[in-house]
Amino acid sequence: MQLQHQYRTFVLVADMQALTDNADNPEKVRQNLTEVVLDYLAVGLDPKVATFCVQSMLPELAELTMYYLNLVTVARLQRNPTVKEEMRQKDFEAQVPAGFLCYPVSQAADITAFKAHLVPVGEDQKPMIEQTVEIVRSFNRLYGEVLVEPEALVPQIARLPGTDGQSKMGKSLGNAIYLSDSADVVAKKVRGMFTDPKHLRVEDPGTVEGNPVFTYLDAFDPDTEKVQGLKDHYRRGGLGDTVVKRRLAEVLEAFLGPIRKRREDYARDPAEVMRLLKEGTERAREVTSRTLSEVRKAMRLDYWP
Amino acid sequence: MQLQHQYRTFVLVADMQALTDNADNPEKVRQNLTEVVLDYLAVGLDPKVATFCVQSMLPELAELTMYYLNLVTVARLQRNPTVKEEMRQKDFEAQVPAGFLCYPVSQAADITAFKAHLVPVGEDQKPMIEQTVEIVRSFNRLYGEVLVEPEALVPQIARLPGTDGQSKMGKSLGNAIYLSDSADVVAKKVRGMFTDPKHLRVEDPGTVEGNPVFTYLDAFDPDTEKVQGLKDHYRRGGLGDTVVKRRLAEVLEAFLGPIRKRREDYARDPAEVMRLLKEGTERAREVTSRTLSEVRKAMRLDYWP
Image 1 (cartoon, each protein chain N blue to C red):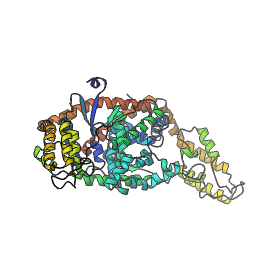
Image 2: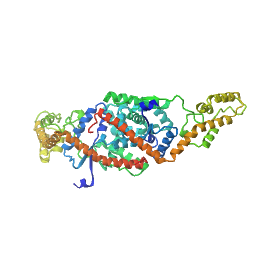
Image 3: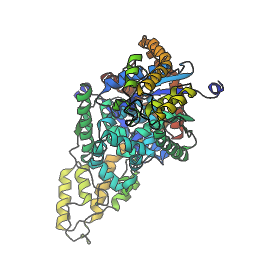
Image 4: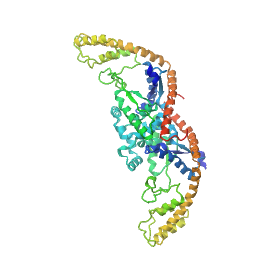
C-alpha cells in the first residue's frame, strides 16, 4: 500500500511498437489493444491505481523519439542483442524496417516521458533498459539534467516454458495457454502437454526435471507437500501422466477461473474499456507533456509558450 | 497570381532536421531559426501569401514519421544517394546518428502532412522526393488512398559556384555571399573572387567560361548587351579583372540592396518574426492535424474522436 503513495503506476499499451513489425496488419494491432488491456484487468491490475494509456495517443512519445534518435548511432542500434535476436527470429535479414531497428529509442521515449524509476521487464528485455539509460545520460550531459535513469525490475519467477516444453511460451509458437482460454480449452491443452518422453508405461519411473507439467505445478499448486508427493511417486514409477495432468488442470482452473471471470465481466463492455483507456491517456498526457516541455526548454526549442 | 488561388504555399523551417547533425549544438539551431526566416522575408516571400511554420512545433510530423519508418527498410535508407554523400562529407562513417539516417523519412512526413504537390528542391535533393513517393505508394497500397505523391520543382538556373570558383557555394566552405552581408563586405568578397588564373596582366586575353565573375554577371546583370561587350573585351585582352569586378559589385548591390534593406527592417523586430512563425504554425497545424486524422483513420488507429 505504501508504494501507491510514493509512486504512480502507468501501463502503456504499445500499439506504435506493434506496428513496427505489423505494418501490413493494422487491424490485428487494433484488436490487440483491447485484448491486452483485458488481460491486465483480468489478472487484477486496478484501473484506480494503475493508469492505462495508449502509446499512439500520446504525441509527445513520437516527438521525444525524434530527439533521442540523434543521440544514438545506427551501429549501436544494430548491436542491440534483443533486436538482433528478434530480427533473426522474424527472418528480416536486410529487409528490416527502419521503425523496427529504432524501436528501442521509441521505448526510451516511453520510459523517460513518465520519468519512470522502475520498469518491469523479462530478462530478455534488459538491453532495452540499458539503451534507455545510455540515452538519458547523453541527453542530460548535452542539455542538462532533465531525464531520469530507469532501473529494470526483473521478476524472480523465471519464464514458464511452453506446453511443448521446448521453448518459451509464445503466441506465434502455438504453445501458450491464454488468460482468455475456457476451462475446457485449458484442460485440453494440459492433456496435450509434453512430459517425459521415456515415461511410456504407468509403471515406468519418470523424470521430473525439465518436465513442464511439474514446472507448472511448482509455479501454480499452492499445496507444495502434495506436489512433492506426486514428484516422488512419479520418479518411483506407478504414477500415470493422466493423473498428474488432471491435478494440473484443477490447479490451473483454480488460478485461472477468477481471472477468466473478471476478463469476461470487462469484455462484456468494450466501450467501458475504451473509456478507461481514454481517461487514462488524458491523465498520462499531463505527465508526458510536462516532460516534453522540460526537454524542449533544455534543448532551447522553447520558442513560444 | 493565378497560382495563389489554386495552391497554398507553406514554408517549413526544419529545426528538427537541423538537429539530426547538430544535436550537440542546439543554440545554433535556435539562432538559425530566425535567420532563415529573415532570409526568406528579405528575398520577398510575402507572409500574407506563404505560411511560415516551424517543424518541431507541429507534433503531427513526428507522429507521421513514426508510422512511415515502418514502411522503409534500413537498407533502403542506407542506399539514399543524398544521405550517402552527406555522410561522406560529414565524416560520420559508422558513427552516423540514427536520426540522420532516418531524416528522409522525416522529410516525407513534412511533405505529405501538407499533401504538397510541388516541392522546390535543388538537383541534389531529388532522391528525397523519390523516397517520399515510395512511402506514399506503400502507404496508399497498405491503408488506402490518403497521401498525395509530390513532384520535385527543380529551378532552371543552375546553382551558382562559390566565390572561389571551385565548388558550390556553402557556409561551411567560406565561399558564400550572404543576404545579410553589408555592401562593403560584398564588394570585398567580389574583389577577392577567383577569376582566370592565366589572366595575369591587363593586356592578356582572358577566359570567360568557368570564370565565376562572368557566371555571376550572367545571372545578375540585367544589361545583357553590356555583359556581352565585357566578355568580348576580356577575351581580346585589355580588360582588367578590377573593372569587371567593379561592375559585378554594382550589379550585386543593385540586386542585394533592397533585399538587405528588407532584411534589416524585419530584423529590427525579432518579436514580430516570432509572432509570424507562431501564427503560421497555428494555421499549418490545421492542415497537418487533418492529414494525421486521415492517416490514423486509414490505419485503424482512430480509437476515439
